[in-house]
Length: 433
Ligand code: UDX
Image (cartoon, rainbow, N blue to C red):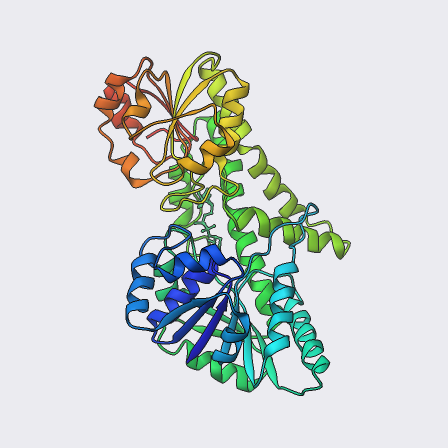
């Protein structure tokens, strides 16, 4: 099938790549000329494992192309994905300006029946709004063209986006007509995953409720970790024991320094704001956010109870909001660096992918050349992002380069036993082993 993808950010580009891989003919479109120029020469504006070589491969086979011309993309496609950004407004609501402008653009040049698919995370009722905008633009041209708007939210996790697109747990399809249902079924026929057909509004809510539930799960475990820490209980073992119950499940129970990224903080805030607008209190969402917003403060207070940070050299391992991405949006590292600097510490940091954007925010911190130089003269190590390479470090070598021996594991990703045997003073988030 012929598919256009409007927006070439994380969601758009991975959606385009995975639909191309399924055998469809893709046209990616963006208003950013620089981005499109880069993509046309096979260079991705983001880092996501496996996506760049896949795009290059699809280009060689002539199965994907990029343009800044929305009209060209709309006329080319049977199915048009809207995958533009929906940033937060100051009150937490999602800003729909880009979605609305994409919808208007489609309405201005649509020439025959199309299915328009909302891939971006959008407030409940947006499919309806997109439909109205397109209808109004089509009417302005004195035309009558049939079309359908589908809500097909993405559940891709950064760092494993391709894997998630190839083997999703489920595909949610909010379709209002049989025609749209059939076309979406055909589009995804090569993917081995259950398809759940529902209304566009229900699909929009499924996306928000899923992310808010996962974020709440993390905040719940972080709250448990605070209690476990004072009671000398190991929260990682508690999580393992809890996760063996099928009703709870073993995933997203990892305590640490809190969730970050472009989705969880934004989506929980947007859902909370929808509740406010409906005059509902939403106390669970409010507290889930509060626990997350204070988790780094709690972590640093715990550190200060063990070692004075004033004048100390801190080696910070990991800056991206999670491993396998260069994304620093809402990354806990930003909050930690700020707290460390305010407490008079000096910071040397290392991250395989995200040093540049953090250096732009904090020019006063030192970026190490490699994952060993970061330990040079350090008093304290803080693991902020659990990149695999940190788990495989030669910790003897690291320790020899240090002045002190404190290690704070913000992700509970290292072995307390091994590090203590080497001579580190290990502290994890309520983790003992
Ligand atoms: C998330 C959702 O998982 C995905 O389905 C959605 O559509 C987009 O948002 P992503 O933001 O890429 O994906 O990251 P995810 O892997 O979900 O992690 C989010 C944050 O939670 C990270 O900061 C991670 O470190 C943290 N996390 C995750 C925990 O602190 N503990 C856990 O147990 C799991």
